[in-house]
Image (cartoon, rainbow, N blue to C red; front, side, top):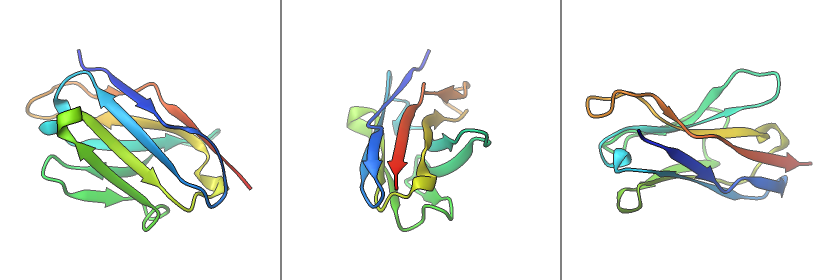
Length: 118
C-alpha cells in the first residue's frame, strides 16, 4: 500500500511563497505521474499542477508563472513551489499518484492547509 504524506503548508501573507512536499512510502514517483490538487471551502477539488514520469508538466491557468512542480526520485518526493501567493490560493492541497501500468491504485495524501492572508 502506497502512502503519500504532504507537508509545507501554513499561513503566509499575500505575495509570499511556500514549498509543499509530498513524500511517498515507496518509489512510486520514479515510474508514475504525480499531481497537486487543491480544494477550497465550498468548491470542488481542482488540479493545480501535474508531472509525468517523463517530466512533462502541466499547470492550471490560475497558477501558471507562479508555481513549479518538480520531483526528486531519489527522495521519493514531489514538490510544489508556490510564489506570489494570493488569497484565492487558500485551500487544502493534496498530492496524488494516479493509476498507472505499475501501480493500480489512485493514491492521495491527507492534505496540507495553505492559507494566504490579504
